Image (tube, rainbow, N blue to C red; front, side):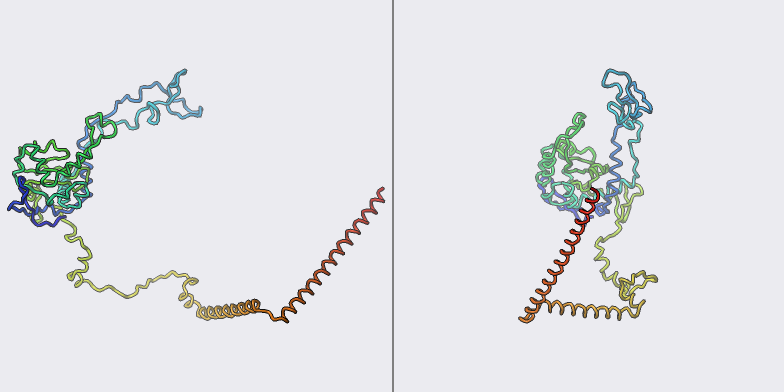
Length: 412
């Protein structure tokens, strides 16, 4: 929502501010309900559709019957005959070539949607409130960097313009012609069959002029400017205020139209005069800065201080193998056992380190002599052992050879 208390009125001829200042209508402080805007837009946008349907015989002009089961093919109806590529091909189904579409469109489908009146009014109020917020208007894509203020209000002399040249000059002086140039530069040809149906070009939306008096000449002045639209303040349409369901339309007001918004939509003190039983939607929070609200003196004086006591749950599920405090509670000797185990590990580590240090120490001359003698004696013993093993193996081989020769002589 916007917080501008009053809005300046500009002279369309000189673009100077006039002596007249208008208080901001209450509709511009209404809460912006994007969910309502998108829902209403999606439904009322369907009401412009024209009923259409496909030919009831389309895709069904075939002489085809199913072959049934037992032939290892699908049971879809197939064209009869032989001698052509078409014979034996599937027909009728939406998955078939030259078949009908699935669920063919009927003219009696439910094309239009009914939307609650208050819901539509809340959506229009939200769209108007968004049109006065600069970031939302910029986010929608409008070029308003050179516009003096939002909402942009001109004197009622604007309604007397009847030449396009006058309207273009006004837009250029007000810095709003950049938005028109954006529309001209981004015009492109549509994709698809729409090009053949009098919907050839896709163009964006530019400024929206809103007037109040009937039969004004301004309609003739702006109707040929690309992207520019015009609407009566008594017949504001959500399709123009939020095209595509996107809030933040750039709106140019006349002074009389801007002043009549309180009469049309009402304020927070009284209801709308021209809309029966309608009251503006009130915001849930008048101040959305929750940190400021919570830390304010008014709130802090009535709330109690935060509790610092520990909350103990009635049932605690803990693992004694991982929780040392719980293990000590279950086994009082656990701490002594752990300390004894740690002491034993330290002693073992110390002994290992001493033995390793002794191995790595420098040997004396006598120790080296003894080590060589021990090694020589060990090598001698190993050689004697290997000789004894070899002699025993040779004796076994000789005995086996002798027995083999004896048995061969007997067989002969």
